[in-house]
Length: 159
Image (tube, rainbow, N blue to C red; front, side, top):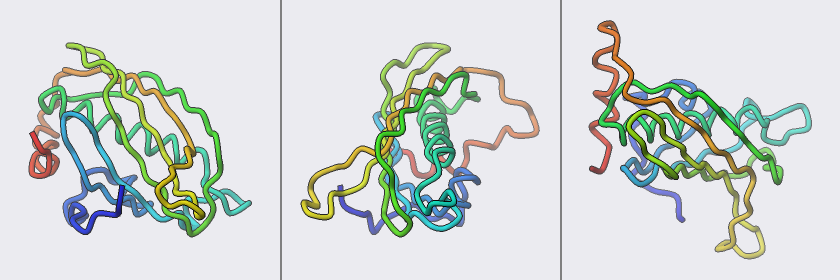
């Protein structure tokens, strides 16, 4: 997948923690959430490789966003995250992320989130960095003080 020139404007922040690390979302639909980011110093551990906590943050954020869209924009909450860190991503590399639903139930969703980089010798080849499963509780009541929480994501979701 190539970098999109039509990334969603971060003027309308869809997820504040993703915004902080420079994550660009380029596709939001019922079938997937896709985006990418440049591994910057603020995303790295002391060894200048992507911090595992950042991978977990991305996994939970994308899965939650996907479940939010797939559940009809109801309130969601992560209840379990399982992540396997398989390869490192170095400072300055571009990392891609994609979340896809494995199960969409009335009150529980399970999403798979993969992060990968490109092989520098064969740019078409994906190098899997991490693989996650995220379980999300859905269809929770939305508190009055955040009733407009879905406004920005609704603008960009391809439904």
